[in-house]
Image 1 (cartoon, rainbow, N blue to C red):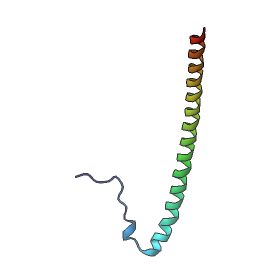
Image 2: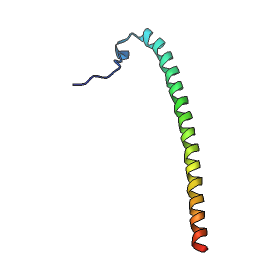
Image 3: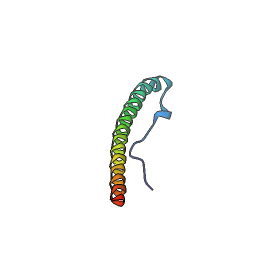
Image 4: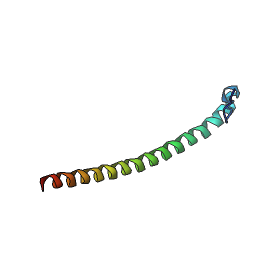
Amino acid sequence: MSFPKVLDVYEFCTDELKKHLDEGREMERKLREEEDNRRLQGKDAEMKDETKEEEKKQEVGIKAKIS
């Protein structure tokens, strides 16, 4: 049997404590979302570069066939 690395006891907390925890959870969610967006933007840029390289290869291949 394996156990998770993090034990979430949120459901066992009082409503008052949950309000305080919700603030921290919301901040963490926003940070993760921002990080994910930064990573996706970087991957999009990489994909665009790869697409341009592939287009250039195709152009060279077409020119070679014509010659």
